[in-house]
Length: 108
Image 1 (tube, rainbow, N blue to C red):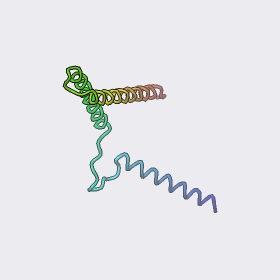
Image 2: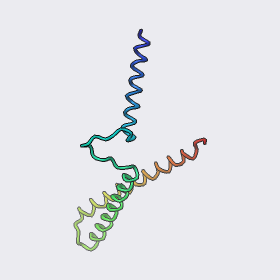
Image 3: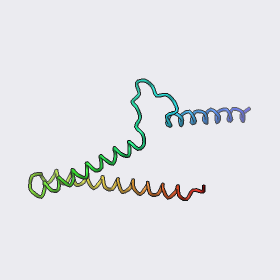
Image 4: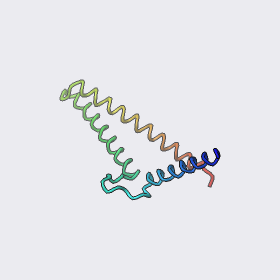
């Protein structure tokens, strides 16, 4: 009797996980009031555009700081934001390369 109960609970857990995976994959219809989910490509594109904008702002802040148009504190803040963004972009690039190499190692 206990084995049947455990199997029933496991089966329900699998069905729940499968249903959840379908929801993540977009197989289920979204609710009318739910915001439309962006694709992975859109998320990457937006993150790249934000990173480029942050890097440009940091560069402009450094130039303004050298000419005396911007205070030291603002230049430091912009430079720290630039450094953080570059570290994040490099880490993401490394993860993408690692994932690509894993795909290449998969047997076909």
